[in-house]
Image (tube, rainbow, N blue to C red; front, top):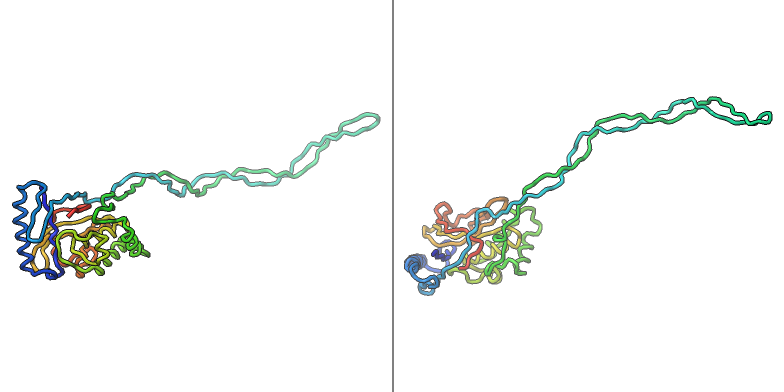
Length: 292
């Protein structure tokens, strides 16, 4: 059975605790986790004041889009042959019958006269007309796994929704929405060292402080509230100090691409991580939700 722990890194690797103490705790935790594999599934691993629970996570695919086919009527110009009539006037000879009374009898007289009449001649011409055809198109929608609300990622909470709407107001693209949300979380939250979830998205927003897990809860909740699919990433990362820690960060799906979003450091930007080495990170998985 797989065990996860979010060992959260202080800003610049030195913020809330001494570096050596942090390394010792990580080593002790690794030893304890190895021992706990042979125990029952409900057992907790305890190291000093740190408790690590066995967690239930849901792994999701790398593509959050569900495709489907739909049909639309598309207009197009087509050249067609059409008939039209042109009028003209002609002089025609008309037989006229006239009755008259003469010498006690009614008599009939025939004579011809002329008059002008309008006639029409049929012509043909090629013209362009608008026609419509049914065209099959591929649409997509995002899996609810990437947009759903969870215990610590309260997407539908009024404060989360209100802030998300405020941040994306006036934006023109999904990328711009995601970048504004990321920048706000990075610039408005302080970092605090502790293990696993302490606040969740709503309380983190209120406290304006959190570790990497709570930073991710808030960032993902705001992104999902704005209609941007988001997921958690978990791995062991080598930070600038050379130390390796368990770490959690967010990934936002924009324009058919996952963007790494680690808002715990001011050196990071949307899609770019500088606080730790992405090339050497040991990724444990990507999840629609985490319970630790």
